[in-house]
Image (cartoon, rainbow, N blue to C red; front, side, top):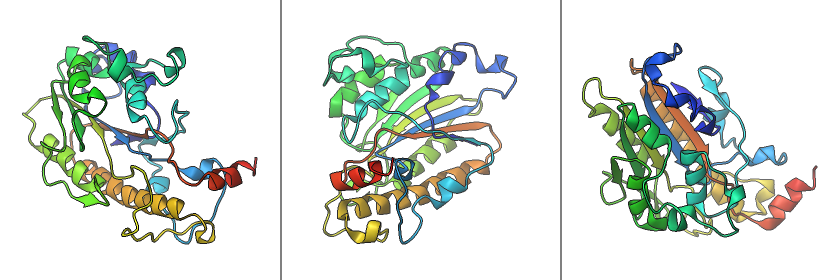
Length: 270
């Protein structure tokens, strides 16, 4: 299993050639996961927590490529990160406040999904929330996805706060893999929701405490990220036991909108 914390865009043009022509591996199963608000905030500046929140992710050092992304958005407008990842286009060339899914993807469009579909892959998209959000139910078929499963089709979703959690979402990925036909090549793009803001749920208990507890939104966010880290381990452990070659690409769509003073404190270190 290969885990990427960097965008798959660099491989986009390489994938124009069939996987079979690449000596690195035969045609693999490809899972791409855009994890909602997944970020390691320590890359901005150092801060202390009572317990680690990315233990598993930080421990990965074999069969893995990691890196840091510079995203076009902050705290919101998730579909713009999706669009950049799937199409290799950049928001830098579009007007401010543009959402391509709503304004520009009006017909069949070139994407990572369409590239792999041309190579015989079955292409699917998962989003464990409302299908009509940002026109995803309309946009995904235009980008080359054969099927789109939302919160209404995904099975046995469980929730943390008001959002479906990563673990139950990943179990749907595993089910997709287990139910594929023999020899079938599958490409899946999954968008998670567990770590979505806002981070003000008074019934959610934060067990990761940062900066002496002075930022409750931050504490709630980091606790969610710790759970996301544990769920990622579940997914990677499963595919590590499979014989078929599998690529897992995982990245965050943007950094979270927590307390402004927290970011100011980190940035003041530079």
